[in-house]
Image 1 (cartoon, rainbow, N blue to C red):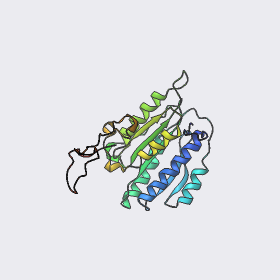
Image 2 (tube, one colour; image 1 turned 60 degrees about the vertical axis):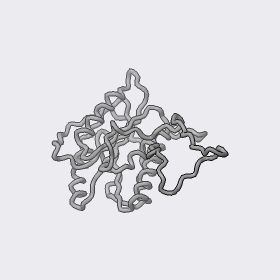
Image 3 (cartoon, helix red, strand yellow; image 1 turned 60 degrees about the horizontal axis):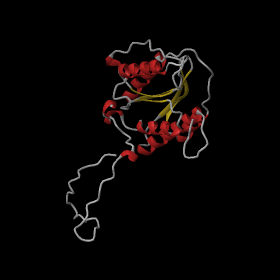
Image 4 (spheres, rainbow, N blue to C red; image 1 turned 135 degrees about the vertical axis):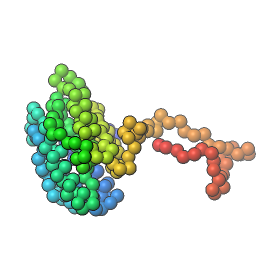
Length: 232
């Protein structure tokens, strides 16, 4: 992947590992009682670090030990969702919520979702990051993306987000991972979500000046300058 800023490029797997560590570390800074586990995908889902923990060293070691399992011609997400539903029951019993963050990197393998989860079984939130190659005769990233969107709409309990990138940029991956730090129950619908804004395209506000000296006019404490809140 392209790291940018003169940094030597990372492999996609190494960039994903760094993004995962960034996500876990940031969530623990927000609340040290968050718990994490890790699963991987071959033809279906398998546990990599099954025990949920807030031990950064344990999670870091689990993430660093992730490795490519080779090429696969199919992928069934049904088992992943079944595992998540079972874990969600345990989480709810402890007054916790469960979120699945899927990072999917297969451009030519359209995932299958055969399991039927009625609306009443929406027990967890589902987020997805889709990193893919450019479309070719052998790649079908649009078909993959459509399946992931459909899965999100079918299984996610609260507002789930899905982001995709074919740029190969590690910075884009890190930015998307940071956007997933938001709590699912405090999110606006993704269709209404327009962050992050490109600051380079924003027009800088012209400072108000006084009638003498051309210096910015000081405002008294509590005085409204009429500009209202600003969003970046």
